[in-house]
Image (cartoon, rainbow, N blue to C red; front, side):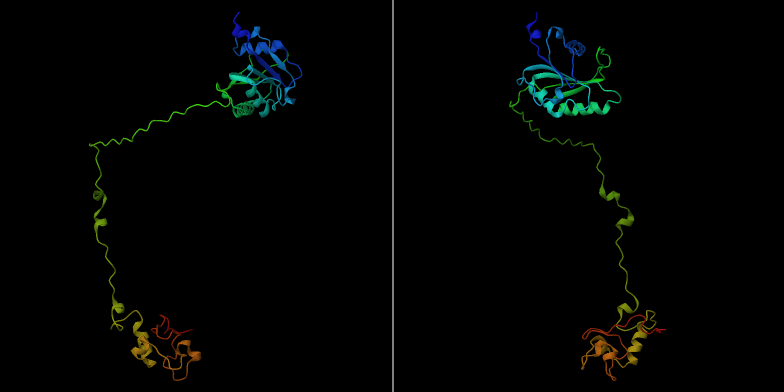
Length: 272
């Protein structure tokens, strides 16, 4: 008899009241555990009410959890599985649920992954026929081969200098060839014309400057008064309401003293 097989320690837990030993052995045999019939498994029922299993750390080779509810095994129970399993040990979580099981499979895989197990895989257990109950699916995962507190040296990747391969036959595009004749033309600035370039309104003025200058002449304003207005009373720039009767700027809009008097374009137009 192989001593390594007889010494295999199996723990079977369930949230049910009863779990026959024959059912445990049948499930383990279908899951590929050879020599399991010569093993005497430990069975704990109503395990959902237990916070800590009465077993030493790293003392079990295989854990088999059979559940009839969605809450078992909980995150705390999965953590206990990781504690009592030997490094490299295996955990099987078998579910006996009806209906759609896709979401439940993901939930169980998440729980065993958060507990530290590696490579969680879904196993179809519908082919296993048991006398007391039937199974829908199972999740198989493995505990890492290293123990808690182990240390490993991390291999630093070798620094490889960056290599740039330049192909001499590669055709480079001349940037100047992308420009068109329109792009090469020098932009033409707008040429000032008319009264903008003359000191006084031109002979054939059409911009309204001639009418403004004619109005200023009728008011008796000189060119110096228009360019540099001055006021002896200090009220000429405030508007007609503050100007005296002989004010030369009477009829003109308010302005700031020392600045050129400017007339709006619609100054000569009727108010009505």
